[in-house]
Length: 153
Image 1 (cartoon, rainbow, N blue to C red):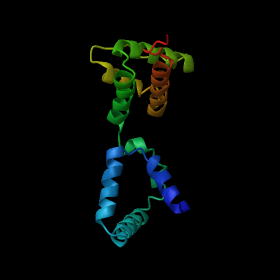
Image 2 (image 1 turned 180 degrees about the horizontal axis):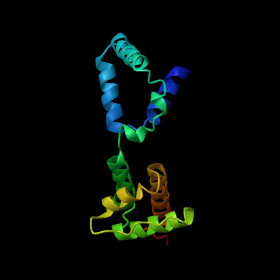
Image 3 (image 1 turned 90 degrees about the horizontal axis):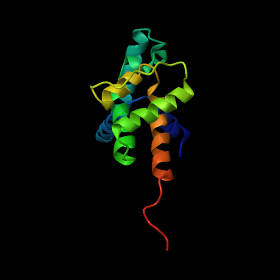
């Protein structure tokens, strides 16, 4: 593979866009011919230069696009759907893991508004990537450490 292809894939992967948004972009790219896509890119570059936004790419991504719901959905899917952990247990496990990593953080208590709301509140204390990593670790421990249903005779 060409380096430019890998580099652009890395940029897209680190952009924070959801899978659906990336698919929409790729679909549009397929519909347009490469020269039309290049015209769009040149037009955007020219606009940015005219606006003198040379530090445009230094602005944190969260100011432009919020993917909270995507992260929350992933965490819920990993723990509740895949691992089969009840929500109150998932809250306890996430809380324990955060306390191990960040003992000085006051973790918000679970509220009546539900699991998704609680995860959303956590994102103001813990980065989404770290919460997703914690959920993945809990899911992996739950799935891989659980005893097998099959018994050997």
